[in-house]
Amino acid sequence: MRILFDSHALVWFLTGDRRFPSHLRESVGEAEKFISAVCMWEVTVKVARRKWPEAGPVAAMLDEVLQIGDYSPLPISLKHAQVAGYFVTRHRDPFDRMLAAQAQVEGLPLLTGDSAFAEFGVQVIW
Image 1: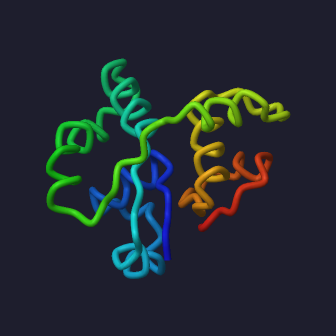
Image 2 (image 1 turned 90 degrees about the horizontal axis):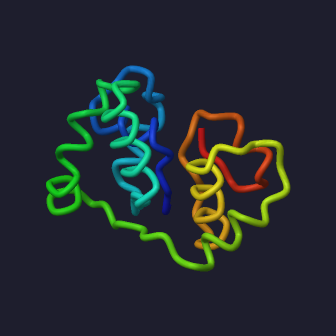
């Protein structure tokens, strides 16, 4: 299984937060995991603005997560940007639009508990 993390799923998975579904923890642990540049951008913006202080440790440990863990970085490409821009949906959050575009372009299911991704027509796990 290959997965792309949404920001809250990444933070909750890495911190052991009980809001991450326990029935997924083992299968996610064994999956090929991708962390988008978008996730780190969203996490650090929200930590810096003091809107998500509990995500601070994840933002601070990104390098260790990528070195030690079984995670691959997913940079933003021009194709991702193009697809995100062309989405026809009411959902305007730029982080979510880019994650949905990356999931679509890369053929990766998105690990998220956010129902807003249904509007984008991408495969969602959760």
